[in-house]
Image 1 (spheres, rainbow, N blue to C red):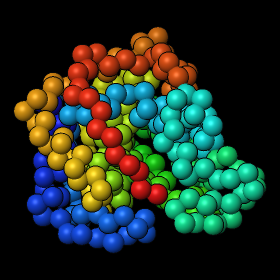
Image 2 (cartoon, helix red, strand yellow; image 1 turned 180 degrees about the horizontal axis):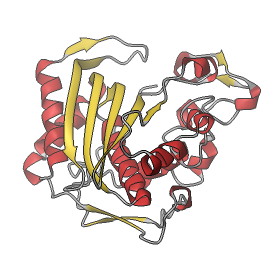
Image 3 (cartoon, rainbow, N blue to C red; image 1 turned 90 degrees about the vertical axis):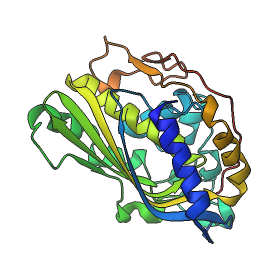
Length: 285
């Protein structure tokens, strides 16, 4: 069993055993705990769950959509086989209607998620500026991405869940801290952990460093009640969990913005990834 599988299943059990029912804006109740932190050595093990199939194509394509393409266009993802943002797409008349909303975002944002995620990274030049800071000022304690930008919220379909990242260089090693305000443990967390480990690997790769620790902090840490049967199925798989895979990155790519972001994701491969199959869960909007 990988350390990430173990950490994840322990968190699921903690929420089930200690959490309280919480009513929230989606209308789907959750069981939640307030505050959870964990640390992974992503150099030792690249974190991809084996108790359910996750892989890297979905997580890394979405990551590159945000941080490389600086895109908010939902079709960009669909063209690459990723449909996780379809429910949040602004209609052709500029209205966001999902989840009971009828909020006018703007016709100029039709087909997008508005001024969120990739729009914000493009506006502030992330991670371009972070890579520059690592190369020119590796001693910096201020190398931060902050997606929590309220000036853009009125024209965004939702504020970011993972909103903060910090990069710390220690000798020849790059560490990353990730901050998440709200976490859907069933659907979101497996994606997010693999994504941000991938971001650390990519940035370490193009700056000549090694990946190190991932420090992960969550505030509202929850499981949707409707996901409980699926979560319990994963917990039953504990004794069957597989070892962690390795992430291969094309050594010929030296520029973050040259990584292949096509459907094939040619510059990344999971080596030795074994999993126990899909565990379907319905998204809450």
